[in-house]
Image (cartoon, rainbow, N blue to C red; front, side):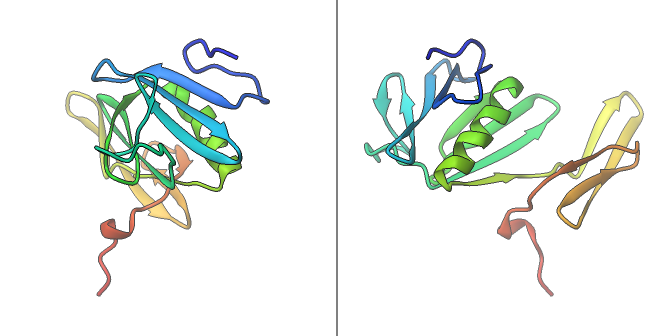
Length: 141
């Protein structure tokens, strides 16, 4: 099945999109593993030609979301792709980390403060969302 803008049916085994660098990225379930393809070739990081994904990291902000593999290689990803990619990662047992922004400016002079509470990010504008902090974001005293 070929995805259109990352919008796929529940039985989908892949998602693809063009990243912010212009590369065609495809994440596909194969034999229970999540495999990453870059321009048609299996690839993770600079030179892991197995393409096997073990962890994904999503960071976001005002200019959009970015997804990186376990080697910190990646690029911009359309919002519409993230839900499907998260579901594929879960099916493959891949850790899917989301980094919560500390604050988001919504308009000139306005900002929304966000706080990580019990696995959710609560914001001063009343919204909340599920989020994960990366281990190196946590300061242990």
